[in-house]
Figure 1 (cartoon, rainbow, N blue to C red):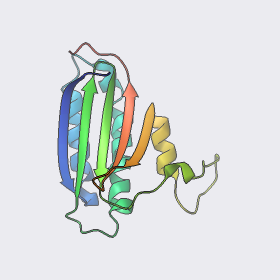
Figure 2: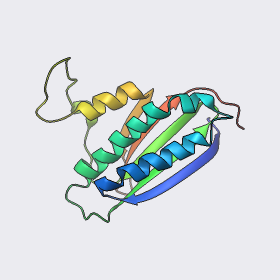
Figure 3: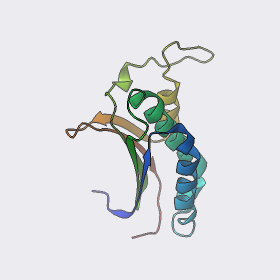
Length: 148
């Protein structure tokens, strides 16, 4: 079992113009890890892009028909061997495995590029519906740090 050594939490409303706030928050979290977990800071841009994609998808798709004050919760958990970003939304669930894999140069009518991108930015990406009615997008990147 992975031991979490640090947790950060952010709660924002479902408004696309908050994406820069989310990005700044995440960059600050990563900046505070520079001494103990340089591998995380090495992947800050990659993980930040994944976080941005997940957040904007929650706003644009999951919360498209919900009030703009609907909460999106973002968790960042750092363990000795990985960082996990979880984005919690309240929208209707979907099965990302049903999205077609785009071929180079192919345009998809129904989207799916975000999921394709997330899988290339992280080591593990999952999306699941929880019993409390929320959905959780989990983005995991592995590495090694000296915390703990």
